[in-house]
Each structure stands twice: as structure tokens, then as C-alpha cells.
Amino acid sequence: MTTQKRPAFGQSMVVTNHPAASAAAATMLAEGGTAVDAAVAGLLALAVCEPMMVGLFGGGVFHLREADGHHTILDGLSTAPAAAHATMFTPAKPDDPLVIEAVDRVNMVGPLSVAVPGNLLAWSAALARGGRFSLADVLQPAIRLARRGFTVSPYLADCAAEAGADMARDAAISALFLPGGSPIAPGSTLRNPALAETLEAIAAGGPEALHGGAIGASAAREIAARGGILTLADLAAQRMVERAPIRGLYRGFEVLAPPPPSAAGVHVAQMLNLLEGFDIAGLGFGNPARLHLVAEALKMAFADRAAATADPAFVSVPVERLISKDYAAQRRAELDPARARHWGPGVAPGEAHTTHLTVADSEGRIVAATHTINSLFGARFLLPETGLIPNNYMALFNPRPGLANSIAPGKRVTTSMSPMMILKDGRPWAALGLPGGLRIFASTFQAVLNLVDHGMSLAEAVEAPRIWTQGGNLEVEAGFDDATRAALAAMGHPVQKVATVAGGMCAIRFHEDGMMEGAACWRADGTPIGIAGGKARAGVRFFPDAP
Image (cartoon, rainbow, N blue to C red; front, side):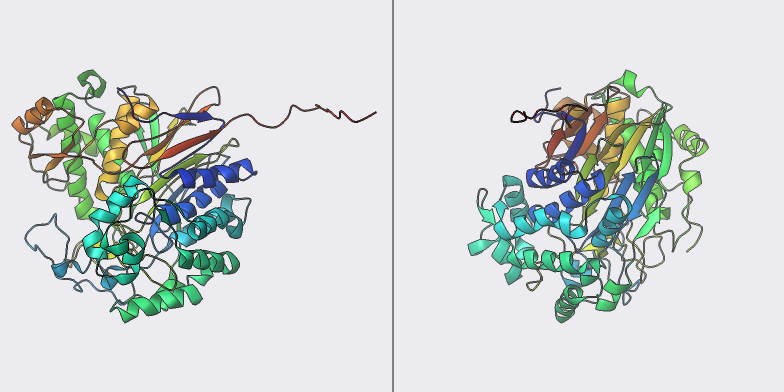
């Protein structure tokens, strides 16, 4: 397979979805920081130069492997405001369970779509746990990018065009991304001085400046004036939650990904267990029979996700059942290898758009972190005093009451974020993740198959064409040919040809000689930067002017 981008190699590695963010992260490593310092600096830089994807007013999941091999998940996902309730939105299509859009899209655009952010709390907690630098230190590249500006890429310009109709209703966000009424042009310079001032205030006051302080008060005041329900008290009450990852086993590899409320760990393990009973390698990557099995696995997983995966503080998620080999065997027996079928859930609860980076340092720390403001440009308005774009995370809740993922005050959103690490014989073998909403864990699942079953190089694995379905249309990227799509249609799949499934994957492979390989794919502005070389040899002295 010919790849569009080339990998990088080094003894430390940074892969983010923007070259300026990769440079910010690599600078931290070069100055003596850890992978955590690099990751947080990269995420803060992405909040400036990937403004359509991530920001301080968003949420996400930070997967950290410490130098001693301990894994932890720092859950900074957004929560529903205290004033939220299960019937605050009316479903636009009440008879279609796959559609969670509300009437007039008020759960997706505008002030009622804003949930309580948690990104900054997770990033600050990560620094306290594994960083050498202060929050003020790692903020400096982001402050510089916001004040001085950066060059707009075609990718950012295309995103502005896609969300332009919604953003045109708000003068402040239009001034940045729709200057003169047209999407910002590639090659132009984008500056956000108000955001630079906000970042400087956070450097001085810490995360409390947003979560209870002046920055938060300004944001809450503006959202309330627009008719939103998020308050300063919501911001002050928000908490980061530390969790243990889900661990699955696939053909001798251990796969670690976030637990609920993230759907990734549970359902990736579930799907890998299911496919372990088939000769995936023997079928071959582009074989329609192999793609059919992937599609059926996705449909099963999404049926179970809808039924049972949500915030474990509100719903008892049957994790052990979902990731068990016995459950996979039961579902595998129900699968027709030649024909698509409808899948209902096999379990029930007991009660009741995004960016990514992957970073590793030479001391053994690894970070895979996925953070977002949810859709492109979040709620699609700007808070002019602070330069922040609020998330639209309320769109991830189901507007119907009585379900696992229904709205409740303080409830965390359910997400597909999948910052994943793969171990072989207990040692790091790969780390990866990507943005892409509901399509995220489907894409990391396929990347595991690419690496383990098909023996692809890292660059091939992240760039290979993908498919996705949750039970409706089967989205098939244009990289698969017409004959493949026709074969899938003949099996009963309602095939839809699409340009992309999910976003740009950022991945690292760990080689036995200690070298790291980093790769990013064509679906975003991803850039790997490797750092090689190192300190002078011990005992070397060279003083030419000495007597």
C-alpha cells in the first residue's frame, strides 16, 4: 500500500494533528520535559490551531502509561449542567432510535447544547502526576500561537466552510472564521488575541480561573445571556475522575483502552473477541468477507452500546459480560458469514468532531489523549470576552428519557474516544487514537486488525481505508473499489460511499531496538516528530582554550 505521509523515527516521539502542536510538544521534550509535559503543551496548542476540534471548554480522555508500567485514565469528560433534565429536548425523529438529534437541533447548536467542560482539569491533573513543568510553562507555545497567529491550512478552511451556515448566525465566531462572509482562506493568518489573554490568565491563576474564577464567570454570564443553563456553580463543581483501563486480549496482544463512560475499551475488546474466532489474516484486508465480519461486529457493539454503556455513576454497565470470551462465542454463533442481519443488544444495564495526540518519552512514559469540543466548532458560537468556543456535548445524550444514555444532572457523556495502547509480552508495542465521534472506536478496532492480523506498517495501518456502521448505512471509504462495495451490497449491507470515516489517526510503534516510529494519516494535518541523538558521552571533555 502506498501511503501519503511518511513516518518519523526517534528515541522520543510526538504525533499530533497539527504541525505547530507537534512542534510545541517536541519542544517540551527537547527542554527536558516528560511525555506528559509534551502532551499537555500539544493539547493546549491544538486548542489554538485546531479550534474546530478542541478547546479549554471541551472534554476528553487522557490515557497515561507511567515509567513503571502503571496505566491510568484521567477522565475529563463533560457533564450535564445541574439544571439539565431527561425531557429538556424533544427528539426530532422519535421513531428512529439511531437519531438523537432534537427538534430545531437545539441539543447540537447554540447555548442549550453546552455541557460542563473538563479538559483543563484533566490536563492539570496529568501535569501534577507526571510532568516536570508547570501549567504556565506548557501554556507558552499556545499563548504565542493565539497572539502571533498561525497559517490556516486547507483542512481548517474546509471545516469552516462545512460549519459556516451555523457559524454565520454569530457575529463573534464569524469574524474569526467567516471574514467578509466567506470561509477563512488557506494561507491566511488566524489570530485570537482574546484567547491569548485567557490563556495568560490561566497561566497565572491555574485551572480555577475557568472552574470558578473570572474566566468561568465571564463564560457562564455570556451563555446565560444567550439562553443556556450552564452556570459558574457547574464549572466550580466539575471534577476529573481517575479510572483503570479496560484490558482485552487478542491473539497474544493486550489492548488497553478507556472504560465507561467511554465506550471504547468495552466494545473494542468485545469486537476483537468476536473476530478472534475467524481467520482474519487469511481472508485478507480488502476481502468483502472480512469487511462483512467487521461490519457485523460493529453493529453488535453499537446495539450493546446503546442499551448498556453510559456513566457508571448512573448506570450499572455489564463490563465483565461484554468483554468475556464466552459472550463473544455466543454472539459469534449467531453471525451469518455471508449475510448481513439486524442486531439487537445482547445485554442490558443493571440499573437505571475531536482531536488526538500520541506522545512517548525516552524514560518509558506514554500518553494517548483524545479531547474535543464535540462537533466541528462545538456549539458554533464564540464567547467574545474570552475567545473560547463552547462545546456542544449535550448532543451526545439521548433526548429520550428512560435509557442508559438519557440526560441527568451531573451525568457524564458517553463517548467513543479510544486513546489506546497495545502491549506485547507486557511491553509497549503500539499506541494510537484519533478523532471522529461515533466512528472513533470502530477505527481503532480496524487499526488493531491492520497491525496484528495484516502485518501492515504503522503508516499503512493508520492510512488504510475504513468502514463504519451502527446498524444503518454501511459507510465505505473511497479507498475500497466498486467491486468491493458491490459485493458488500450483495450481502445485504446498505452501502454508502464516503470520503472519510473518522479523522486523522496519530500512532506510535515501539521497536525492539528502542527506536520509536510515529505516523499520522491523510485525514488531518497530523505530523510526527521524532527526537534522536542525546547527551554527550560520559567523560567527554573538550576545552580548546585550556592550558
